View (cartoon, rainbow, N blue to C red):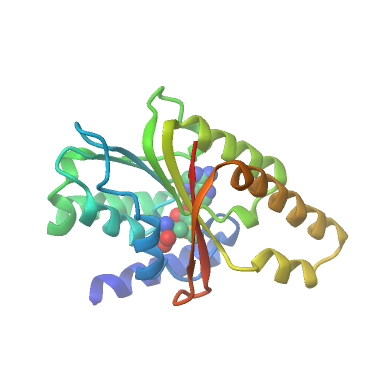
Length: 213
Ligand SMILES: C[S@@+](CC[C@H](N)C(=O)[O-])C[C@H]1O[C@@H](n2cnc3c(N)ncnc32)[C@H](O)[C@@H]1O
């Protein structure tokens, strides 16, 4: 309980400091985390290579870790200094995470800068795409699909109807940005979405998209 409160505190402070990159006031709830981790643990023989993008305080990471098979490996990519420090400390001290710590790397950079030649069976993204410019969203989606193995799965979420709600309250430039993001995400979903989950018990409610290339 104390750990969770401290994670909520850190997340909220980072949200106030940089809402653009943090994108929410609280970490994802357990139903959203479970849906995002839907394909963890169903990997090929020899283990699944998993990338979590934007782990924040680790709400989804904990679900991923709980489901990881004995040969699975997990990379976390996070640009926020404070989240990185907290995650590294948790993997050193928390028994639930220590168990897999040797198979986990915390990479301190934005996902667009991840250029190490490694590709993944599964990518789980917590990025707040609706906060970014259209060009950034296109760049991020290209980076994510480029990091996936052929046949690999990308799971990501967006808050239900948030673009439509924000567009109602926005001026012309902001509406154009939101439409552009909708088109960029829609182009990926139209071609590759294999499953969509509706997560009502989350603040706010969310869709989880699972995409297979
Ligand atoms: C909405 S929070 C999600 C945090 C956590 N996954 C959860 O569900 O509670 C978005 C996270 O994405 C991170 N982030 C923002 N831009 C990023 C980027 N370009 N590459 C990787 N992570 C990024 C933020 O620092 C933050 O940790």
